[in-house]
Image (cartoon, rainbow, N blue to C red; front, side, top):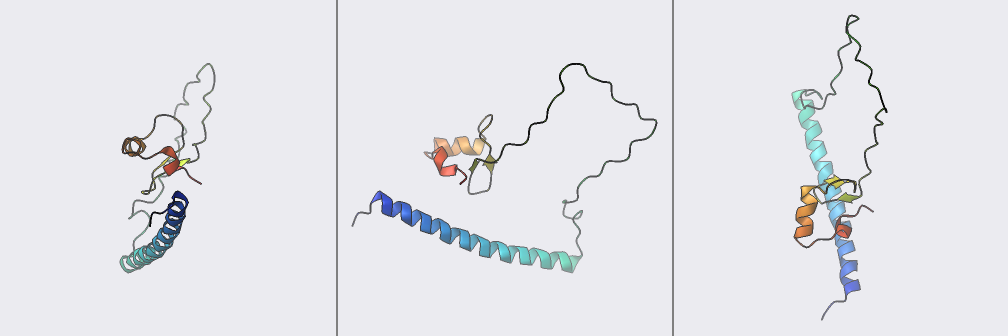
Length: 117
């Protein structure tokens, strides 16, 4: 029997939900194993490369940077992810499309396939 488009879409949604449940279950196991290894080996965030770098205090003799003239640069907030692939790579929709997205589009996918809901 031939399935309708609506039936296939519904089946995809069910599969996505099942996949997400399995992913969460697997992640719990991975996190447990990581925590166990951290405890057994006494690892720190620095050992894992997760420690944040701290700035050394500026010396009192350090010369202040020269003032620039003109408009001040305003830092833009990073764009919220609007597109995401299965590997967790994201794109905010601004600027040049990342290579992973260009490759997927060339392979026949659409932007709607990667839209964050």
